[in-house]
Image (cartoon, rainbow, N blue to C red; front, side):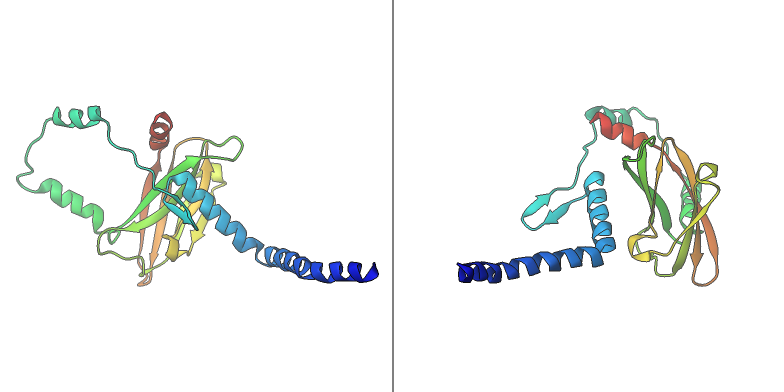
Length: 198
């Protein structure tokens, strides 16, 4: 009887060790696992393509409505003969070295907030973020007049926040040659409203 009990205990030791090892790994790598799960959750909420083992979720796609395409044909138009508008448009790209501030949003899980917002930089065409050292974000008084610094170049100097209404975000870009430039973005909830109707 005791030999059977001993055999059962010895056979259970590998399973117990695996459980203990898994618990230790969860404790040691809890921050990394939490960041990974948050990133995964954010991608799902933003409609990005996700593949995990044999499970694959395609990227969200919203096609333009027929009415929207027809409305474009009813607009008046003329030729920019002196290329004045072209030159104005180019001045939009040049000072910020073809780097632009953009945002995404998803329904918020925070109490009292409407959306979670992710702001980040994207380079246009051949531009690069390599010559940026950091970005300082400012959202306004509702965030305690705080200036938030991002040095995460790999993720486009991303920053996330939650809000219950639209606001203006300013981002101060610090280039490695010492120059700075301030970009701004009106963080509207219009695409969120559009997405909720679809």
